[in-house]
Image 1: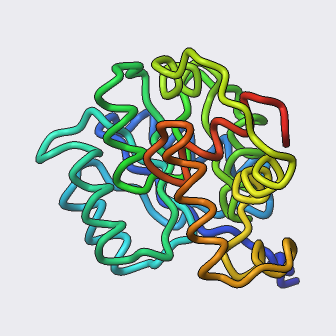
Image 2: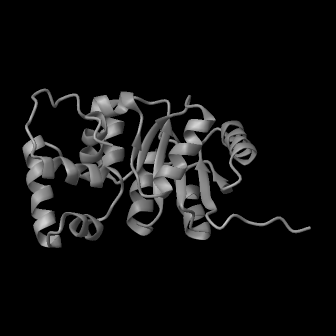
Length: 212
């Protein structure tokens, strides 16, 4: 009997230079998440980029510390070549530089390797749905320099909440009944006011404030 394939199947590539860890993660995901399929495993930046090109996954679980350039290089190239593919940094590193680089390059998540598999599954599903998922510790580091409380209007808070929930500019503009150009200008003003650089940091800010 042929087993039905879930309509919302999330195709994932695991990239890690420790084969036993990558294989173990593949088996864990298979055992607890029937809607997540690890289509292949890669062990360095070069093979990761080739694997993404061959399989076009929905999500890449990317280790930072790898040979041949590491996860940062691989993330940059994956996001440049295949912008629809979402990259999640799954790592033991909590170094500030790694965090900022990963977010700057467009990673959709930054999670510790010690995360429970159920939490990882939830994160993969959320990221596939357009959300940004960052561990509380990393979120604190991203906003560590933001010490002063900056007042925002109810409309500005709602805009940040919608960004954090993964809505695109067209959807947010429709929700707020403004033009897309006005929305972009308002979002840029909010980022400047909060001394944030991009939508990822805006999403982290909204999450830390408890608006989502």
